[in-house]
Length: 574
Image (tube, rainbow, N blue to C red; front, side, top):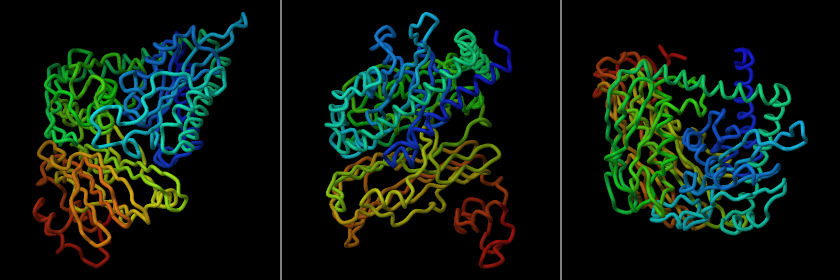
């Protein structure tokens, strides 16, 4: 047994290692999607491919990344690897999630006393690339019906061999994307991040010795497993069920159910998705790695999020998803939206099921979508192709004792927004409006968070636009008597002022000057609205989050009569 102080020092050193990897990836990345939105994640794995630690970034990446490392090891067993190698993959049916997420796995070797190099760990990261080819710029096509339309499909291949770039692989990848210089830069940033992780881990090997370090890493995983099992034991045994739906799949199939039966049995949890929709024609199928990732995240939320996230943390959780279903499709299913949209609904149903047993540990439904927006075309400023991709925040659910957060990325997405200044500098686009949506949060003792409105105009060129979103037809649910959040919407306004509503999953050719307005969903409220503190209602009215009419309708509070001056500052909190 490693002494407790050394164990804790090593555990935190591994976390710091992953955080430094991620900081390096963000600092050296080329695309705004990585540099600004931080749509990337880093983790460290032991020599057997079991996760040791991770940087707390994108939940949908981190729970699924072990599947990628396992696929890399299956394709390249340790005896086929050497120092300086790095394995690239994105194939959703071979350890990936969806094609824009490129995972790079770098084996870490240490020289033993005999002068031989032994494999001691893997450094890995996943980054969402703004374009990987396919039928639509941005590679997030709302109308794809098979994976071949979604971009270049990369099984595990060596991107670097013996420390040198594999030019043949680089050539294949860069010849199939619209923005090769940006892709090359982001791939090199991923390799630089893994080199950071490799260097830091070898410093730990030198400091503690391989035997002590190996024992400590195994004990850290056992510690996480023990804590997770202890938390699960605090839940009441039983099977808890919940059902929700996706609005549609983008190609005509609507109200696609996602069902979860969560069985708590002693110190383990089993989640069964029997009853979920069969795999569908549109791009909302979620491969098993994504479904498992969302499930792991949901159980962590309801137990103790401070449990160190590693392989041991996930051992007490099993996932059953029928083959050929929307949560475990067979190739060549279109899957780009499964990682983005279906992952959110999986989270909603697992949390909804657990709310039956422990409502005080669960939030009301958040916005339930990532609001994926892509623009592409030829930049008139440089006469070169561009591809812009972003996800947009919305409401975070109300919860026991606290209102939901406004305008944030929720659950499986944990990115930042693209700053207006960066967006307008990097792309021929202009942000015309960016604000919170008044009254979009569900009423409750604790109000649901507000959605956002973001209007983006095309400047001086024709553009191709794709929207892949959800919760436009079905509202995010409230809990414990709270009201649902407001659903989302999207509108297109041409330069001559004509406005039409856009389907939540659709692609469009935009004329110069056209403006797309994305209104993201609010979140559900928590608790009976009649129990809300009237002062909190008045404060919401003063801050523009709730209208006076809604304050009266939902809470019975005459807020207008209680604002004493034009500034509305009296009684404001911090």
